[in-house]
Image 1 (cartoon, one colour):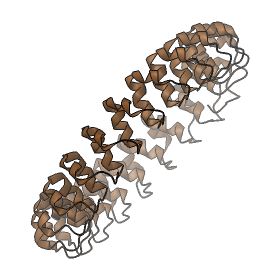
Image 2 (cartoon, one colour):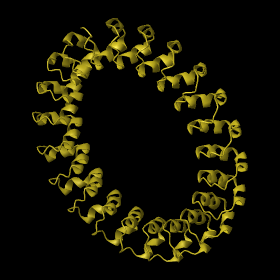
Image 3 (cartoon, one colour):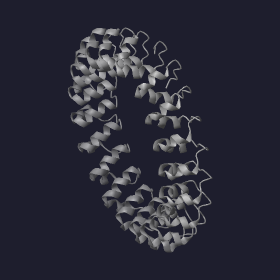
Image 4 (cartoon, helix red, strand yellow):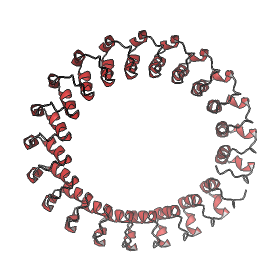
Length: 449
């Protein structure tokens, strides 16, 4: 990958090196290496103009050849199905319609908007489907008899689609999305159309349609101010009513649990603390950071959990006896959290993430903390901790220059060592397969043949 010009062809005897060699576009790599399948595959990607057509007998090479838009690829290679498929993507104008007999090619042909594709090809279902997407105005209404085409036609907003096609359920559904103002209310008898009608905010939809539950549900989303509170007797409508922040919904509606839940989200300041007896409301109350929520409510575990997230500075350390709260406490970087809390494993884990410099090395006896310690690049972490395999692994990632070559006896450390481009890594380490592989990637100029 690094274009090592000082890497000789002899190294290509190693499979992985040969594979990488192609990627590097090594012009001194002879065609003989192409006998290796992976090399041949990569050769095409590199657009090696010295690769002869004979190599195309390999399936993968042929496939890649098309991607590279090699104009010296003859039509005979098109007999390979993958090549034909790719040819369409490349928009090769020298591809004749005869190749369209292959189904995948026909499918791609539409995507490419080939205007020389005749309507006869539309007999293939996938081509017809794509034809609509391409908005081919020469597609006649007869093709609409295909259900998928009809479905797509609506999406394309073909104004020449008559209302008669709406007898198809999916087309009717799409019709609403397209906001076709010539769609009469009679179509609303179809449940899906009614559902979509609300989304489109059709002001000619009367309240009578609201008898359909889904329409009522959507009606709230649309913030139809002519929707009376009576509709709120429907549970789903009540639920949506809160989301819409309808100030004319009275606290009486709060007897419905979902409404109460949403009420908190909407930060309705007229909801009293009495409503907080409902657990979900309490949970949401914390999220909304209602300063009038007293610490007493925190006895509920979920509320305590949320309290920490909200960084309520009036939350005392006593609440931290709850494990989840402790966990969140660390995330919030509460500087009044003492090291004693760190005896809890999760807190210790988070402590490292927060880069709490007052965390002593003693906590590192916990393996997860040690792992995180490395990520944080704590320079006060001694090499002794590196005896733990995970720490050694992370140590390399952090490019700790005080990590000695002795640690390299661990294979994972060796692997990472190369990635970090440690100049003090000797060639002897290259005897390890993975290290050799990585060495090339790192462009180690001191790596001899």
